[in-house]
Length: 220
Image 1 (cartoon, rainbow, N blue to C red):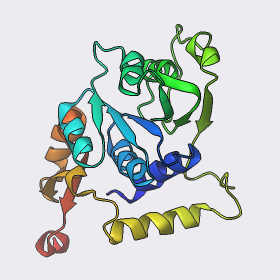
Image 2: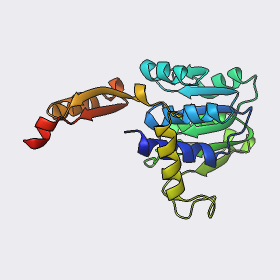
Image 3: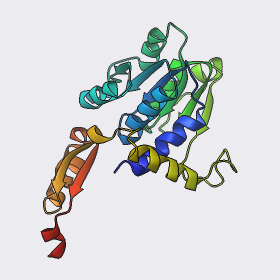
Image 4: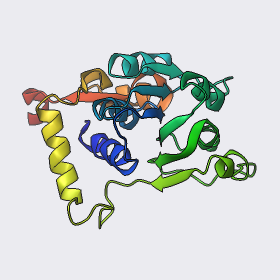
């Protein structure tokens, strides 16, 4: 359940070149964002800030490395990032949500010369998105991160295969903790109804829905 998100999270952190002592913001705390929080903290970030409107997701992020979590609804996220980083701004912002407002806030909250690692696959932005204010004055660098790109930006040392193998190892040895991300866990028989409940109707109640396969169900 976390194998694929881990690959995109790791690529986002690597492509942003997160270093020891950095101030890092992760926007969007779905599976990719949650794992990015863990990886950024383990990479040595001194402050990790999560951004998500869902309180449950913020709680999980705090338990796994986020020092702060901001609700973007009714909040000037860029200004709050500046406040939490002593007016400096974030060295790195990892954007996983794909919303125009999120990218606008990221440009506002970025430190001078900082990097936005754009992991999201966004739809076209509506008119009004502005690259003329904070983007230029903050000398923002935007890196589009994609785990499946071949060649990898660090080719030949890194490839899609190496990313896959590394993420598998990190999950198997417990370096990455995804237990809280997989909830609820339902039976295969109940999966259609649960999918409608947690994915279609109330996606805010679940990050990843797990499905168990019983021997009796598989034999039917």
